[in-house]
Length: 288
Length: 322
Image (cartoon, rainbow over all chains, first blue to last red; front, side, top):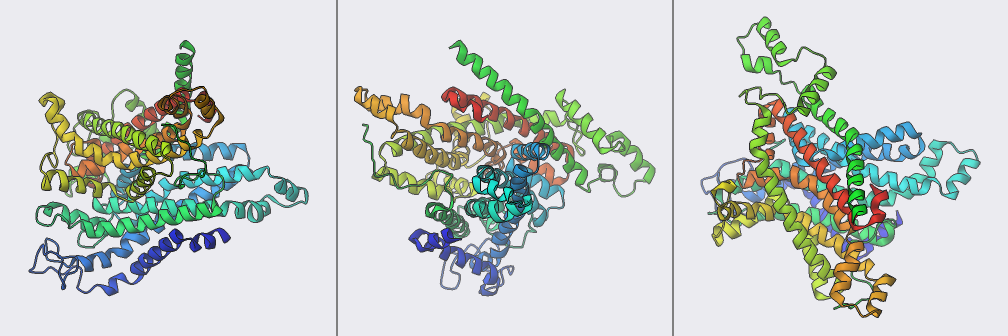
């Protein structure tokens, strides 16, 4: 995992890691930091930010800062849950599809193609709502929908290493398929996987915030970052800056994950893919 | 030209052929949703006072007494003939509800696609041509920031600016095109822009990368040596080869534009298909959810096939990638 430590030594990587660490800390202890009860209604409704209420109060007089802090676990950890599910159902068939025969390969390919065709957000909404409108059902749906991208990435990486000479050499020495996968293929795929996991977690967070914004998978008084934005929506004329506070938390987390993925990719974690955010090469072309 | 047409038709045919197993898998998953839910329409419709015999008769009316696979085959067969069943609660045919809402969703998605292509295209090309310059860096920063903005935040920000602070556009609602094009367009602008931003950012980023690589190719230098004007080299020669990744990314965004429209439909109070699915799912109206998902999957598959054809047209070498 040298590429990850290399990435953390760059400035962008260090900033991203610091922001992520802060968000994770918030997800762990945020509810205990809340200065007020996030569910308690107050007389001072729709207050602007002040010393007593840093982010102001919402339409029921609840302290927005307390709600943002208390909503951190439900807003962040759920995305990790979805990505974890997606990793398992995507990566395992992704690697094994290259090594376990044509029929198995064909079936996994078709199933993953079918999953890609499912319209993402609507399908997650349908699953979550029909299966009891609970957050874990929603995350299983999101995880299933994330699986094809993990499948494709690991399969592409596994394919590129499957016919490498060191794999052939290992097989000539009598190594089993399982041993080849574990010791040779896995270590080569891991850096690529770290990059796409970070990107997928960013995407998962956006989906989770959209679902909670729509009120899917949450019971109303329970605060989530998306839900706080939704409750501000009806009071934009009184508090037009209301959605800014929870939105900034979502954007900072997503941005940090994307930045970290870029830093690891630039540190050499992902040789196969073109850099998407390069600074412009030394050989500049002037054409106008 | 005729070979190009023939090639496009062949590519479209191949893409549709690939779509058949995909359609079977995705529709089966969609159908299974109804099987997994504990919603029983018979007892829901009849209420608590129904006798077991009533429920059994009602289950027969709904066709729920047959095995799951038989119901799936029947559902798919009916769907191919335009019959998606009826809502469990209102008894309104699902196909009719969808037909009423599909134009709304499609016009928002098409508008967003257009904006994404124009914005992403212009800024992607400009950034690639001025690689390393101020504009390039600005595009990089803006696209990175846009990638972190959830759709509903973009929608709310647009409402705040263009409906509250500078009230020039309506904050929500819908008017059919028969009410006059300006009215129709005024309701369409903000949702389309809100939906397009994510795709526009991705297209700009991919176009910049693809075009920047292409501009280093020998044939571009050759065209320079031959004295062709710079804009012609970029727009005619390089763009054709450099646009591949951007078109591919655009193809990946098409399902999101159709399936992700539920967010803008909610924020802007548009009577679209996403809104229909969400309401039906929350109410447990399984046939409506299944029908809406089926139609959405169909639209996604057709648009993916079209994007593949576009890729072949752009770059004959891309034929192998389909």
